[in-house]
Image (cartoon, rainbow, N blue to C red; front, side):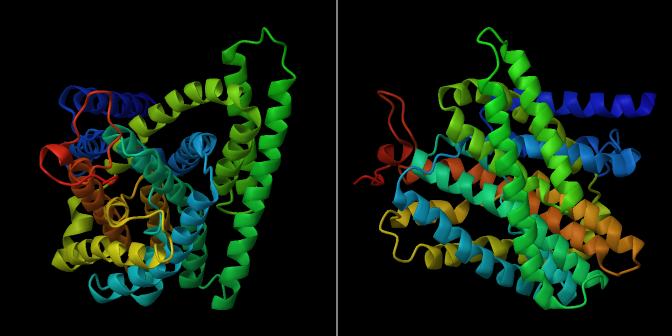
Length: 413
């Protein structure tokens, strides 16, 4: 018990130190959180050993991730048909082309078998809000583009997790037919959204009927209690339905509470940030270099080509969307970091594959974590610079855009 308590203490302290360093240096917080996790974990000093938590880590990660997704749903304001059409079109195109391209690259370059390559393609669809949102806020990206990126993550993260689970069941032989994947995907996503929407509606009714002198602490406690209950309930009814339920609940609460939602969101946002601070180092600590080395340069090439392949996907997804200029598409093409859900899903799937005696479990996990390392590291450092050069940064009064200073036309020119 003392060792487990120390583990959580070390993870919290490491994450808080990374946040402080990010504040003092201006470096991307997500990059430092990932780096400190590697430093204190199996790849570094081996001070934090998440495997000691066993399967107990899974529900903790699930509930904390649902808090982050609920917070994202609260802030999701896709006002205007142009913005809504942009998000829907990009998400649909990326869901199809991203899955196919990710699976093909994993098979051809990283050497995964086709069943596991399809699982990787589904996992890699998730561009987590746990990483995207801090990046968007830190670089002060223009609101429209920021909303598109956050909405993409909020939609594709739960969808990718559900799809990856179904494809894993195909690889394990638990699903006899590929044709069953689409109906089950729609059932679990639709069921999760329905449960989340109903739970969000009930939460709003409860909050509205509280006495006027009810404290913010009580509102927060009721919100967390109902959120965790509906997420765990959805998960028990339909595997992986808890994530779409969390997003749907957040959207419903945010739309129906109006001014009260912004007050509640300030509290939820603080807790969501705390969840990110502890979870990112904790999951990164579970990675060892031994899981990456067998992939060789083929794994690195797979991830790098996948990052560049997103440019083509965004170009196709942006066809017929006048609201997206070439600068917007270039910026959208370069921000696709993978986050906590991706790491958690890969770790869980690797355990199930190893238990079933299927070869390649370590390679799948290693490739997923390699994707996290490269996308968070490369894009985390370069995206703020690119946004400034393209003139896509929201400026404070009297501030000069980096792009203007360098003679680069801004997005409004």
